[in-house]
Length: 197
View (cartoon, rainbow, N blue to C red):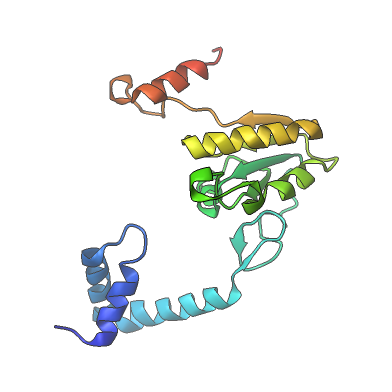
């Protein structure tokens, strides 16, 4: 069929989220058609990124500098910290380009069934950051899952000692969403989170 190197590349690519064996095979075929335009630059970029990447000691973001470019940006306000579960959540919020504060990546959620407790996450570091004089608000942007809600509740209790305002992202009807297509939990959350117009 194909050489061992090509099969190995397909196997490695198929491990990536959103790529199964068929999608990985198509991607590899496209790269093989134009190795000098796709494959070789991709290989160089992967190696350079792997050698340069680091985790920000302040917020937990992945970048090529420490502190990361977000923490080093003096135009971002130091008074609000947005707490997320994982780096991909931080990147998702950054794509919206509407939050101009700081972030804190927990590294997961509390999950007793999986053996993940408070000491396994960066909750103590968050509490220490919240104690800084400049911090006035912590936004909890954990996912609307059982573990995400549990984690948010635990952090809220821990933050009470700091005196900072704790808020949550709104839950409910998405922009462009039709009520008839929403699940019961989303509709209930939207009713609870309603606001004055």
